[in-house]
Length: 284
Image (cartoon, rainbow, N blue to C red):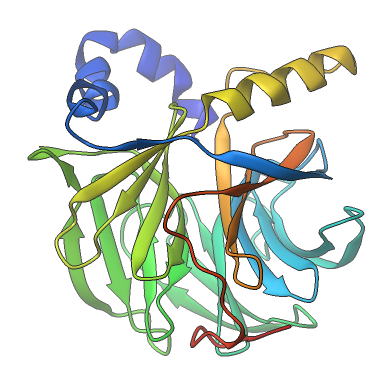
């Protein structure tokens, strides 16, 4: 996720490798799920995806990163057309995850310690919040915001004040799973991209334990092949990032930073939902 940290990751391989590899060493005892692609949609190759959420009616909310290019947008899933967008209000900020709860779109920044609140339809700024540490991914459980900061922690925050309500450490077979990135709360579980890997962790929010891994390596390979054929190969930091649940079909939307496609996939255990989901939006 943090492309400016990539050189540090390379220089500190002996230290970073155990962190990134920790989930991999226990995969034999943790179920591994393979997504089944059911549809493909266009994705803006300039979008350095940090957050993704399906809003219903064929519209997705996406937040993007990179200094000078960060922002939040509402986009038509089928066409990729941007309906409305707003730049991250701090020009020097590196934008991060976003989620909609109660008609408000919340948007994090990486190292500035500021979260923004926008009207979820117009994307007009409605407020700002301060927090300590880095901001990476953001989702919600219908009542509280759930945030990642690049560590093995998930933090629940009050949507009105951004105050911390509780924290849980994510583990797989007792080992911490660090570099938690983009998040999505789906039917009682938190799904999290793990930065610099082709794995998505399915997490029990009560205990922090990883209950399954989703292997998205086939999606990464397809995205890379498509990008290369178009003459714009993926780069080292164009990693998987972006998870959104489509309740009316019981599917996930998965993408990556500057990927040419958003993939709609089926996974075992996901159920179709209709009506109000409790996350502040009416699904149609």
